[in-house]
Length: 552
Image 1: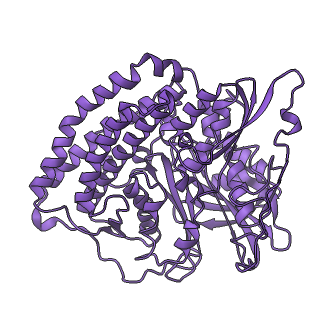
Image 2: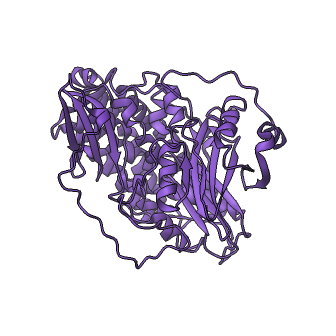
Image 3: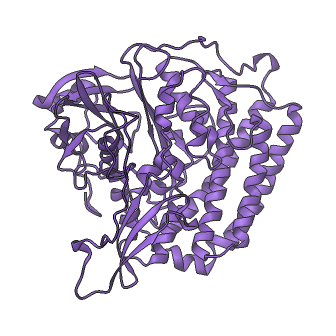
């Protein structure tokens, strides 16, 4: 989908049978996943089917692509949603032959499939016809084998040579009339927000191409989760995906998926505590995002960064009181939380209210220093432009999508926890630029404060004999064989989803993390090409990525 291209009028089917009829002769079989009907299609009809589902049925959000190998086949699963109604989901299952794992690429339909399919090729070994750039994305190009393949030899030595004297300028980047230069940004640079390498091609001072080289922080998080039990051993890992104060939001993603998979209820009291804790993490995460963004734009260690860290530390103190940990909280449990609010409760409530009382003045100070600052406005207004249709095609979510005028928030649109019982608003800006993404985060801090205050009011008045923090969960969870689920929550950076497939044991057979940063980072070339290098840095900062979640 090109910039500015709009989707045609849609006549949306209402049932799985209508979707099956729309797929027509390309349908091979039907499956039933926990929250979505599954449709098995021919591997050479992926684009035709996805175009129909997008243009005629309104499934305009490719949320995630999962891939796995079975004993008799390979399989790709395209998890489709609607930006207007994310509860309307379908799973498009594409089998591929064991001896020739090839299927058609979805990239011409959804641009976000570019990176997702490259990851599937890299780790699983599925090849995608018509993919514009099918090569490894997390591992070096010289890597031998596919680590998630059933026959992968972990003991095989790997040789990763340095390609000396290679000319990094490709032919399509050369211009006889221009002054073309190749510029490496990162991977060890504060402006890359982690170990990210940007391979940038300049014509004079303008960016004409930028490619994100990721994989430096790949830690096999999905594989470690596959080796852990549902009940006890997986929950500590989510804190480490987005480690920028967003631990409880990450834990919520796993908890929601596992609880739906195993049909576990969560007590209402625990739901309120979870919702409060999640919004505390959102404030802490956004504070750091705002501070580092100002650091990127102004180019020096400003007071704004220190103010943001100061307020983040206040929230970290509250989270430490609640969870007992400073960063890797491990506070959620399947069915609830690990323990009740800290005692004395009144003292904890007073600390939270003191923070909320001081927050409006602090936010006004941020607006004085940042959003109304003439220098920052010159640097951010009209730069890093991401039109809404392009953002949708790349699967952008969170503040990045809402900064492009996309009114999409899973807390409201696919309710979980206690969000649908509370009064708050989704923050949307239609400027589509770096400035709009900054404003969305500052406004979301206000809305999170409203949610926390309402949760505190509820918890203060909750009858003591009804404070159930955890439901009765079996000691060992063994979901049915081949039971599959994809579930997501609204993380600080966007839609954080988990796909799991059970095999009848106490450990998942497949565990896939849908990182919002992974899809959001894909939009960087769209925002940066034609801009200047400082605008590229501002655009990257406005995405608020963390490489621990991009690479996993």
